[in-house]
Length: 349
Image (cartoon, rainbow, N blue to C red; front, side, top):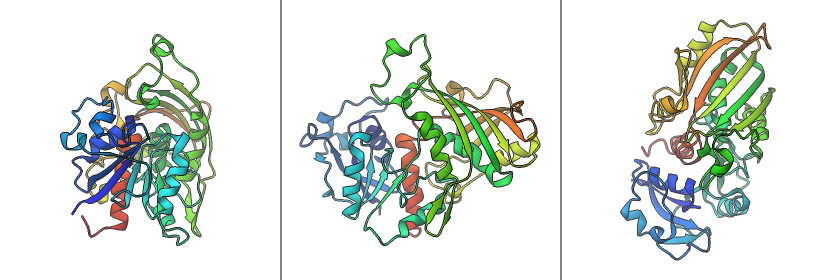
């Protein structure tokens, strides 16, 4: 039997991605759609401006849109709410004994909220064991942080990391719909994305941290980030320099990446990539257009590993690519739910 779920913020770009992915999901069934007051009371087909390249499922189009109140006929909700309203609404749902799986930034730093990448820190779901509140909130990270952390995790485990310097070239899709004005970005690069550098410097520390005494102790790691918006539709590219704790050969680093798997692979979750990390040998790879759909569009592609002159003794630089719409937003949050379902309900598969 499939688990009934709701989607709040269902009419926006991320909400539409949830609808697309959950409409035929093997574990979940869409039982409710909720949005702002201007959409409430309409059918979903009337309320939504569908922007995805796939057809809106007809059975979803006729569903009524409810208000974002915790009276939906389900116990699990996917939140695609804008951060301007997400914090309060998600807290109300959690207080009413819902499990909220959120794409928003509002609760990422709450001490009892996992900031989850299923391959990296599934053990942080034990934060949900707390009896202090009836429901729960689980969040996903910033789009650029997700790909960066996936690439760093095997290095942290095998060699240790002291410092990271990262420059991002972030695709337009990461800004949502309608997104960045064409007059701003065509024939141009935007060298600042509001709040992005702070997220990229902070969030990996919690995700890579350890659960101790019921709280997450951040990994002691220094990250310097510079974020840029570039005229690419899908697929973020990052140029990363890493200072390791100890010495490692290029062969050892590449083997660590290629051998890395996590809990989603062990559970054979339906949206999990066969391999979370792909190392590509060609000197001009990875490229967003060529590699954003690799391995269900859920893998991180890495290439051009070489010594770093800034970190000469224990350093390496490489380029990595991830897809902001797949490894975050809707497509990242649905695998989170699969990991939570595997964690909480292992016999229901």
